[in-house]
Image (cartoon, rainbow, N blue to C red):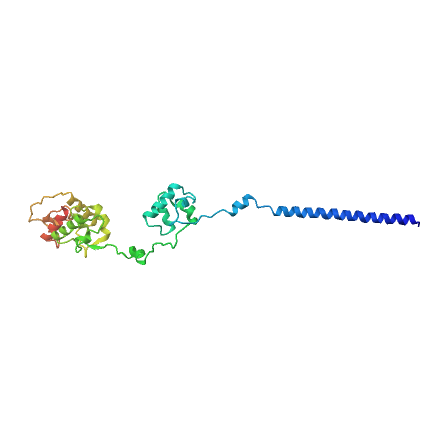
Length: 276
C-alpha cells in the first residue's frame, strides 16, 4: 500500500478516538447533573400535611385537675358542660372514678361513651359490696304470725296493718278469748276482705276450729260487718231435732242450734255471734 493510505488511516483512527472521548465526557456530565437533581429533591422539607399529622395531640385529662378550657377539648363538651364539671367536682370533693362524671347535670351515658377513653382519675375508687349486703334479702325470713300470740308491734308489720289496726286486733282478741281461725280476723273493725287477702298467707292459728265451710264463714263475716242483727226468737221447749233436719246454721236460732249434738248454750251463742 502507498504511504498516503497509511497516513489516512492514522488520521481516521485519531479522529475516532477524539469523538469517543468527547462522547464519554458528555455522558458523564449528564449523569452528574441527574444525581445532583435527585439530591436536591431529597433535601426539600416535608409537606405541610405530614407535619400537621405528626404534631396532632391526644387529649387525656385527669378530671380531678383539668380546668374549663381543657374540658372543652373533649368531644361533646362545650363551655357550659365544662363549667358544670368543675362546679360538681368542687361541691363533691372530686371524682372517685370516671363513671361519676355522669352525675354531672347534662352528661349522660352517650357523652360518657365518647369521652371515657380520654379521661382518667388517679387511683380510682369504687364502692365495695359486702357479702352481707348481697345476701340480706335472701336471709330475711318471711312473716308468718300466730295472730293469737303476736304482740301489736309484730302485727303492725303485716301489709296494710298499721299501729291502729294492730291495737284493734289485740283488743278484739282479748275481748273474745282469741281467734278460732284466721278468717275471724275479718271480725275486727277496719279489717275487710281486701286487707285479709293481702295477709292471709302470713298469718295462722294453732289448731283452727271451724263451725261452717269457708264460703259460709265469709258470708257470716260480711253480715257482721254490715251490722245485720237477727232478733232472737223465744225458745220452744217442744222442739225436736228430727223436725228441723237439715239445719242451716247460718239462719238457725239458738233453740234450734242447741238441738245439735255437742252444741250447748255457749257454743250456740258463739255461732249466733258469728252469724250476726
